[in-house]
Length: 159
Image (cartoon, rainbow, N blue to C red; front, top):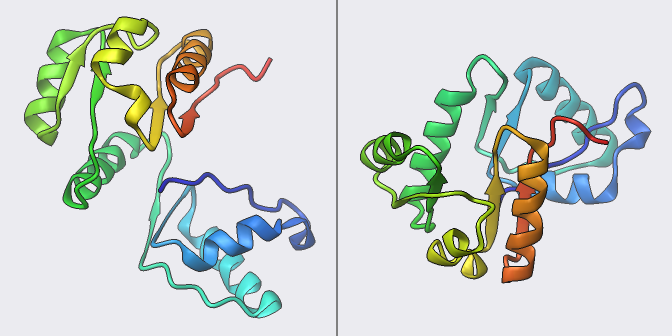
């Protein structure tokens, strides 16, 4: 399961109970700066007597995002999680399908028929990563109404 966690900025006491609980059970951590995150984890471990069981910690930022996404897709595939890619560009779909070995649907992820073809309602997690925040919002609403259990998206403009 993919979970996005807030981390405290400036005051360690701002950490949430939910974040502490998830950190104790996670297998993998993606963060912008591994050095800062390792330092934060050592403080949390000492202050809250955490038992951290994660196996891997990786940096994930704008300069290595593509490589990390490929790594994560491979890891998900190895764990037998069903993954379906949707993209407007048929060439991108062919590349994703060939490179990652996952089904890819050429279509609009904000179109109900495309989401039905992808069986979005049967997913545990639906992820929207389109360029426009409005498209991501539409995707979220459609995926939710179709029955997706959890939805993750990026929003460039929080307004």
